[in-house]
Amino acid sequence: MKSDKVREQQVPMESVYPMTIPSDYPFIKTNFYYLFFSHIAYTAFYLILGVGFFQLIGRQRTWGRRNLKPLKNEGFITVANHCHLFDTVLTGLSVLPRRPWYASVQRNFEAPYFRKMFRILRGFPIPDGPIGLRRIIQPVVSAVKQGKIVHFFPEAELWHLYQDIDFFQKGPFYLAHHANCPVVPIIHLFRPRKIFGKVRSKNILSITSVIGEPLYPRVLTAEGQRVDLDSVQEMSDTAQKWMIAKVVEYHGESKQSV
Image (cartoon, rainbow, N blue to C red; front, side):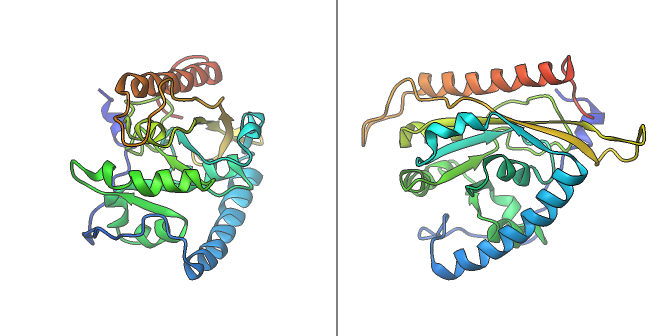
């Protein structure tokens, strides 16, 4: 259970524009016009916020890129801690020059302002409801087999500036078993950056992103067969334990927020 202080850091997205996701909804869009305008928006967003703010002001650095080299021409799934309003940008910086697709809960695509930004920046919704995850199996598996990266935040909820690792949803690991692909864990670690010896703002951070080794399904899934849930759980637990270890290594002890 999180403390009241930490709960104040949760960033809920208000569902103002409820959407109905039809059966033919293009979760991962590939048409020319979308990709053209998405490319422009994505590049501008990353130059301004990613390079301009995070790397120059925040001194964001990425370690572990060597773990991506064996996957240079392959598709796979990435997971990261959901710890910053713009942690999608931090993830994108980590895997440059490749550009992931970002899965997010449906309510983020029903929120004012953010809904259009998420979509143009290669985001797609995970539909609400008991079969929501099943609806994205085919598009995610297809994207991975085409050599794309698809990113998930297994903690689901966004806790701004929160550094401990929360409960993991199993969805990304379940999908990785359907695609028989690896999951690459990424952890974003930060502390307030001191300027002239003082912390000027808690939002000006010194950021370290660490890319872990790819995690492969212990049990492969034959086409049309059920996924081995024990293997899914094992993959999820391994990714979560790795992230927790990196938090302890970076901060010296479990640290809920900066």
